[in-house]
Length: 247
Image (cartoon, rainbow, N blue to C red; front, side):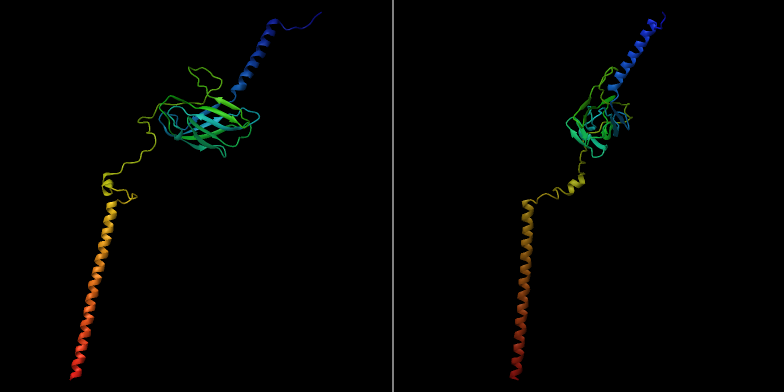
């Protein structure tokens, strides 16, 4: 009786190939989703840099509704402003970074947004640990930072930085108010919106009283002169009429 059977060696090779495909497929599933960051000027100490983030959707039942980012050392929450985001999404500073979110995106839609950073720190790389929250409450944590080239299951978005440009220096936090010039300080020792001092009020009142007294005194003198003139005119008129009557 004859029959066909696969030689043992070929059978073992076939089983090994199928096993390899299964392993590759299983590994590709969880690694398909990830979070990334890119920069308009990826150099240390670069100013007004636009950072663009992409968080790939991994849920088959709900869309992304919020992303919370932990900022790396050297970037303060108040140094970040929102540039572009999904409709109705807003950015809110947190003690260690910021949260950005709004109405949940459509299921399977990646969350893409960009922010502007006043200045990047002087570093070789920056990790932006990210927590993704979906509309159904599921949370994905992209917070692992690989070291020494090792691979991690949930890597945080990492931005590699080139060396700083020649002459680049760290900016001072905040914007200090310019000091007043000596001439301006000498021209006005007292702020224009400050309340007047007691001495200035007393002086003003004294001037007003003096002016009133001077005005009333002048009026009295003028009145006396006018009355004297009227009396003199009346006396002259009476004297002339009397003399004419005697004649």
